[in-house]
Image (tube, rainbow, N blue to C red; front, side, top):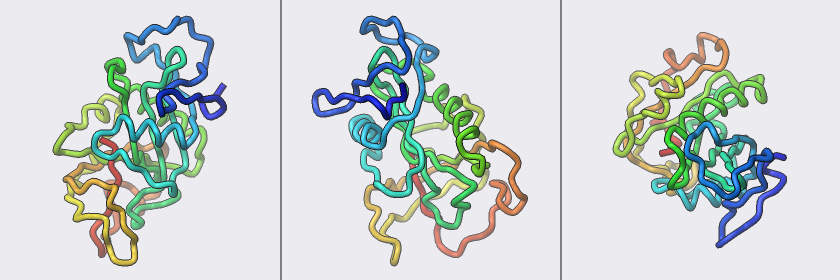
Length: 214
């Protein structure tokens, strides 16, 4: 059963979910990321838990998202991820998919993030035949990118930038976004045309806008 089909609320949240599989845990806590099960979840579940767990970017818009995932063990959720079109409109909107939010619950097993990244990449490759590249932005002030390296992602060289805010004329207010310096990471799912490869981007006239997950 997918998480999108059965979640229940408790204490103002949606941490409780019907198990994806019939695991024999008896309410126990996972001691390894290998015990976690990953599947799709609904947008409400992902947004509510992102607000509870994400210390930097608790807010998320309701537009531009294409996929939501969660990690579950014995009926409890331990991580959520929200994927959407790249926030920077100069980037390929059909062929690239951006990890816009990634929130891990306190007490989750070690390596939860990197294992979930690997699983999601494989699932997206199967679900979206048009998506060639995954991207995500690391907050360089608070994180080192360890989860991306462990999952086989690569740094997009030359893409360490400082966003100057989201209040850009004719773009609408995006005050829920971080303005800290961030590094872009990418993972290729399949061959891409030379004109859209990460390492050979086309120059843009306006400052690039960013998403952020950490």
